[in-house]
Length: 125
Image 1 (cartoon, rainbow, N blue to C red):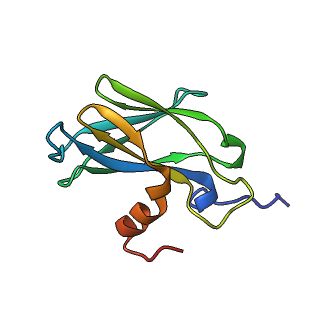
Image 2 (image 1 turned 90 degrees about the horizontal axis):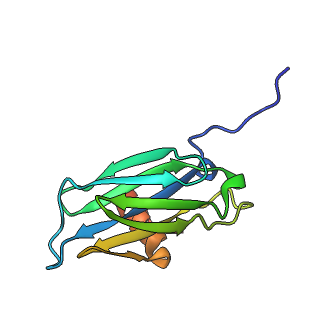
């Protein structure tokens, strides 16, 4: 008999990077192509902004990936992200919010949970 394994759709197998892309005047950038790269493996995940400049990228990261470095890229602009989460917490979503405003990235990790809840249309915990 095989040992039980977790399903990859569970929250503890994914890391969500979301945010908004706006130009220097604060206008949302529509249809911008973003790439999130796992620096350790070189594997990348793609995303695209919607009409309000909002994007969501879901990477496959497990408990062992805590502290792993990721690179978020839009054209020539890049920023480094460190995957920060509690590997013992298998209930809460893992991720961060990163906004790109006028060519400058701003990580807003404290806004991740409320932004994700708005995207999912559910209340925050």
